[in-house]
Each structure stands twice: as structure tokens, then as C-alpha cells.
Image (cartoon, rainbow, N blue to C red; front, side, top):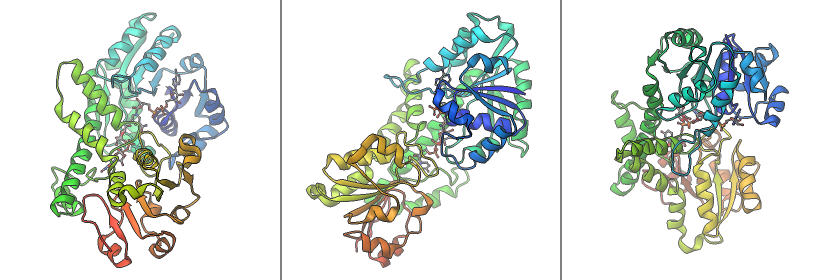
Length: 438
Ligand SMILES: NC(=O)C1=CN([C@@H]2O[C@H](COP(=O)(O)OP(=O)(O)OC[C@H]3O[C@@H](n4cnc5c(N)ncnc54)[C@H](O)[C@@H]3O)[C@@H](O)[C@H]2O)C=CC1
Ligand SMILES: O=C(O)[C@H]1O[C@H](OP(=O)(O)OP(=O)(O)OC[C@H]2O[C@@H](n3ccc(=O)[nH]c3=O)[C@H](O)[C@@H]2O)[C@H](O)[C@@H](O)[C@@H]1O
């Protein structure tokens, strides 16, 4: 099939590359001319394991092309994915200006039957707005609007796309449904379903899924904070709970709050949608409130430990990306931690395997950025861990002790065994577990 993907962020790039991988002809459009030029030269603009090899192969074999010219892409395709940003507006609602702006442009460019697909995360009723924008200049017989929300996770995006748990498609057109089924068949061979539904339900499904996952995380962060006070161990509690098949083991990890470009904005946007319908969605407000507090959890612990003396102390920080295997720092808990530490007058020595350059652009000289995790420890009064990169999981504890001024670790991701830390002689405080005091 001939596909255009408008917007080459995380979702657009992965969507375009994976559809090219299954033999489709894909043309990706972006307004960022510099980015398009670099992609044409083979450069993948994001760090995403497994993407590069597919990107390179499909580009070399001529199935994956890039342009800044929307008309060229429209002429070359009969399926158009909108993978455009939907950032939060001032009132928390999803800003639809990119989606509706491009829909308006498409209404002047489409000349043959085309399926226009909302791949971005968009609120209930957006497909109708896209339809209204298209119909301004276009006969209704020439297009269908489909909602096809994306459930990929950064860091494992290619795998999630090629082997999805399910594909959700909202449409009221049989013609579009048949074409979408054929398009996605290669990805659901393992038996996972393509679930067809009406447009509004498909749009709601995406927000419901993200908000439910965020709710699990905030719930576990509350359980963890209570475990600390009540003398329990959240790791044991998590295993005990998660073994109930009605609950499940995944997404029960407490930490420093959820970050990233999606959970924070999507929970907020769903709360806004509820407000528009005069519905007080109380759980969502609590989920957001818990997260706002939790992302300062490690900074709070450092402040409680050092008191006034935090001023002038040097804190090593392991992890800057909002989660491992990505260089994405949008809403990263590390940024909240850094802000609080700098405010308290502490010095920060930070290391991240992939995200350093993005964070350097924000803090410049205010933070010392290090080449590796051990360099960050050199002369520091304590270590704070905020992202669970694999490389932090089995460090050389003797070397760490020799570099730190004091053997103190605040771990926002529960990476280490408590007994092991006791034996190694660390003061070790994590999330939802009793502190090891050596
Ligand atoms: N990042 C993720 O992991 C996931 C994101 N989503 C949703 O997908 C949507 C896109 O997210 P990301 O890929 O992270 O976006 P992004 O913000 O990383 O990238 C968007 C791209 O669109 C381009 N763009 C902006 N206006 C344009 C225009 N008029 N024409 C062509 N290109 C234009 C930008 O230059 C940029 O390259 C959002 O709604 C997001 O909520 C859904 C699932 C996963
Ligand atoms: O809509 C989106 O954009 C995507 O949002 C999330 O994906 P992503 O933001 O890439 O990352 P997650 O792995 O979900 O992690 C989000 C945040 O929750 C935190 N988290 C996750 C799981 C957990 O058990 N505990 C926890 O604190 C992570 O550290 C991270 O800060 C969803 O998992 C995807 O299904 C969805 O497509």
C-alpha cells in the first residue's frame, strides 16, 4: 500500500519505518527541513534501540522516503497517518492546532479516495473535527477519517509496533475497515486482535489505557510511601499483589513518579475532557496530585538527610532520561530533582548513557555533566539514582565507596538488594523499603 506519515517524532518514525518493513511504500513528511535533510542522509533523529537497522534497510531499498512537501506525500499515497504533536494547552486540554491545521491543508490537496488516520493521541470528538476540516474543501466520498491510537512505549517502540498486544481502530466506514485490516494483518499474525469500534470509543480507549496505567503507578507510589512508614517492604508487597492474575505483575513499580511525553499530558487531558462534560473525575485528580509529589521524593529524602547542610554538598545523579533506553527527557523526574537540588544550593554531578546533551542545553554550566557513572561519584557526598539504566544495576560497589566522600545512596528505582547494601557498608535509602543504616 502507499502510505504517507505526517510528523516524524517518535510515533511517526516508528509507524513509517514499520509499515515500510512490511512491504508498503512510505513517505514521511515533516515541517522541520533540517530534520528531513538529516533523515534523507540516513540519520535517525531519536535514540531508539532496533530502529536504526530497519530505518537503514527500508531507506536503502527505496520503501522509506522523506520530504517537507505535503503535496508530494498526498499525491503519492492513499493512506495518510497524522502523527503530529498534541501538547497540553494552557488549560490542560490537548492542543489540536497541528492536527486541524494539517487537516485543513489536506482538504486542499487530496484528489482521490484517501483514508486520513489520527495516530496522535487526541480527545474524544477529534475525528469529527478532522472530518469537518476536510469537508470544507473536499467531497465526502473522497475520504474517510479513522482513529488508530498508538500504544508503543519508548525504548521498546519497534517491538511494540511490530508485535502489538492489540490494534485499536475506530471507524464508521466498511471500506476503511477492510483496508485497515489488510494493513495491520502482518502485525497480528501471533493472534493478538485488531479491535474495531466506533470513532469516539477508539479515542477514549487511548486515554483510558494511559490514565489507568498512570493510576497503577500513583497507587503503587502511595503504597510504597505507606510501606516506609508502616515497616513493610514494597518489593514483597508488589510481588504478592502482582501474582494475582486479576492484577498482573507489570506496571506496579514504585519510583520517582511517572514522566515522559505522554502520561502527564494524557491524564491531564482526560481530566479536562471530564470537566467539559461536567464530570468530576476524582481519581484522576488524585493520580496527578500523587505524581506531582512523588517526583520530588528523592530530593525530599536528600533534604531530610542533610537538612540545612545540603547547601554546599555535592550530589551525584545517575540517570536523566525519563526512563531507560531513550534519550527523551520530557517531564523527566531527574529535571525536578536537579531543580530542587540547585535551589537548595547543592552541586550536581550528573551522568546518563544517552540523554546528557539534551539536559546540558537546559542547565549549561550549572550542572557538571560526566562521561561515565563513576566520574559522577568523584568527591560527591551522596549518590541519587533516578533512572534504572541496566548499566547501574551491577556496579562496582568498592569503587563507588572509594569515590564517594560518604557511602550514601538514595535510590529512586530500588535497584539493589538491601542485604547486599548492608554488607557493602552503605547508607541506602530506596522507595517503599526500610532504609539500610550503616
Ligand atoms: N512518544 C510516544 O511514545 C508516543 C506518542 N503518542 C502520541 O503521538 C503523537 C506524536 O507524538 P511524538 O511522536 O512523541 O511527537 P513529537 O513531538 O516527538 O514529534 C512531532 C513531529 O511532528 C512535526 N510537525 C509539527 N507540525 C507539523 C506539520 N504541520 N507538518 C509536518 N510535521 C509537523 C514536528 O516537527 C515533529 O518532528 C502525540 O499525540 C503523542 O501523544 C502516542 C503513543 C506513544
Ligand atoms: O501514549 C504514549 O505515549 C505511551 O505512554 C507510555 O509509554 P512511555 O511514556 O514510553 O513509557 P512507560 O514505559 O509507560 O513509562 C512511563 C513512565 O512511568 C514510569 N513507570 C512505569 C512503570 C512502572 O511500573 N512504574 C513507573 O514509575 C516510568 O518510569 C516512566 O516515567 C505507555 O506505556 C504506552 O503504552 C503509550 O503508547
